[in-house]
Length: 347
Image (cartoon, rainbow, N blue to C red; front, side, top):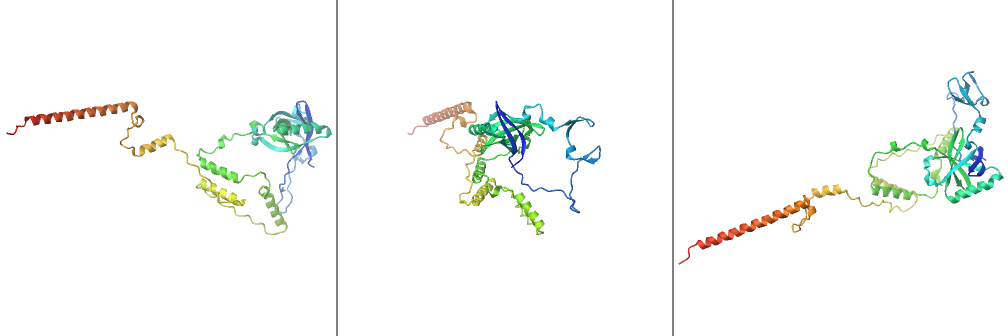
C-alpha cells in the first residue's frame, strides 16, 4: 500500500470530501551510490553546521528564510500547516472545463485521491460519478511543499486522480524555436498521414512500450556480478540523408506494414496532383511561349496590349488603310481609260 503524501479534503461549493493523497506512479529506475574508486568505500554527503563546524543530525535541522547574511527567519512545520490560506488544508475546485481545453504541457505528475473513511464514501462517489458523466475535468488549487499549486481532477476507473498543473507564466513561449520558413506540399502531408495511419494503435501495451534502458542496465550488473563478458551494444544505424521526402515516406509506410505482417504491395504513398501555379507564374510562362492562335480568329479586347483604347485605334488604322487602297485602285483604273482613249484608231 503506498504511503499517504497529504491529508485534507476536496471542496466544491458546500460539498466537502475528506481524502488522503497517495502516489499514482512508481519509479523502477536503477539507483546508484557514489564510491571511492580505489577502495570502493562509500562516499556520503554530510550536513555540517558552518558555525560549530560539526555534523548535525536530521532532528537538529529546520527551515528558514534568509533576509540578510546575519538574519534568518525560522519557519516551522507548524507554521506551514497553519498558513492563512484556504488551500492549505483543502483542494478547492474553482471550475469545470473540457479536458481538450487544457494544453498537455501544463499537466504534471499524478496522485490518487483516497476517500478518508466511511463518511467520505458518498460525497467521493458523487463527485466521481458527476465528473464521469459530464465528460469534464475539475480545475482546483491546493498548497503543498511551501507553495500554492494549480491542479486538475479527473476520474480513472472510478477513482479520483489529481494532476499537478503549471501556472500559465511557467510555460515558456516556443516562438523562438520555430524552424525557418519552408514549403510543405499537400502530397508530402498526405504521405505523413499515410505513415501515421499504419502506426495507429488502440492502446499502449506491448514490448514496444517497455523500459529497455532498465533491462539493459540489469544485464550489465548481472554480467559484472558473475564476472562474465558484458553484453555487446548494437551498432547504431547511420542516419540516412533524406533527399526525396516522398520516397522516404513511402519506404517508411512499407516497413511499418511489413512489421505488422500486412500486404506491402499497396505501401506506396499516393501522389496528389501538383498544385496549380500562381497567376503571375502562368502569365510569365504564356509570355515566353509563341502565339499559337489561328490567324483567322479576331483578337479579343483583353488580348491587345493597350485595352479598349488600343482596340479602337487599331480598327481606325485598318479602315484608313482600306480607304487609301480603294482610292489608289480607282486612280489606276482612271489612268488606264485615259490612255486607251488617246490611242490612234486603226484605218
